[in-house]
Image: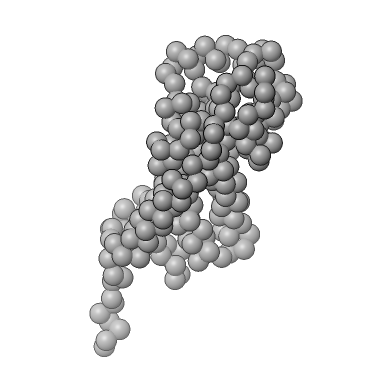
Length: 227
C-alpha cells in the first residue's frame, strides 16, 4: 500500500469553506445578530453547493458522484462490515458516507434556497421576498428553520462517524481532507484539474450574480409613501 493523492484541491477547499460558512451562519444569527452578513454568507454557501454539484460530474475521480454513489445492495453489504476494525478502507467515500454527502448537500441547498424567499421582518429580505405571497414566505420560513435543525443532526452524525472511524477503525479521515492523501492500493489522481475548477468557479459566480442581482423582481413600492 502506498500513500496516494485522493482528494483534489477544489474538493478540499470546498469542504473547509463549507465548514466555515456553516459556523458563520450560526454565529451571525444566534450570537452576533448580523442578519445582513447571514444573507451574504448564505449566497456564498449556495455558490459553494452549486460548484460541488457541478464538480461531482466533471471533477477528479473520487469527487465524482458516479464513483461513490452506490445502490442499496452495496450500502447494506458495507453496513455489515462497519463494526469490523479490519475491514478494508475505501480510497474515496465509502457507500454509506457517499449518501451522507448527498444528504448534507441537499439539506444545505434547501436551507439556502428557502432563505432567498424570507426576511428578518426589519430591513433584510431575500432577493425573491417580493416575488411570492405571504403564505409562501411563511412556508419557506418553516422550511428554512426545520432544514437547519435537521442539518445540525446530520452534522452531529457526520462528526460522530468521523470520530468512530478514527478511534475504532484507525482511518484518519480528517488529515486526508487536509493534505489529500491516503494510504491505499487503489490508484490515486494525477492532478486536481485546477483549470476546470477555475472555469466552474467563473460560471458559478456568473450564475449567482444573475440569481441574486439581476433576476429578482424590484421591491414593492408602498403607495402610501406618496401621500
